[in-house]
Length: 189
Image (cartoon, rainbow, N blue to C red; front, top):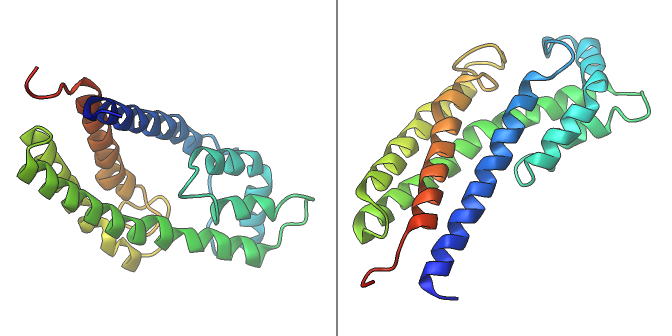
């Protein structure tokens, strides 16, 4: 495989990842009813049972990140005997894994990508700057784990601020990088 085909293949896989994420995003708004308080175990159980197909669909679409924990919430509802204590534990276990822990890893990866893009000039300078800014945004949202689990809150472990402040910028960087890689031409031609 030559250098140009490696770039193009990497770009195509990045675009595919963006497409999957963009298709998954609307599923977070399709639940049959609003997510109840996690302190209300019977309501959480009923919510998970009503939305089990949606949970499994999200799990399938987010192949790597949500395969273990979020899918388990839906699996516990099959047979219409959901266990409230299990469901609450499974729900809450995802907050740190896909919140602060994931943000640390994304921030580190983007920091490395920024250094590589800026030092090797394999990608345009703006791409390295975008990676650096997005890395910083990831680290800004790591402390959300200290501010509760209110899903309607902006700066909470399960709040929507992380998606707006870190996840969307990360997806924008993947999209921009993928387009650059697909369009990149080898030097000297």
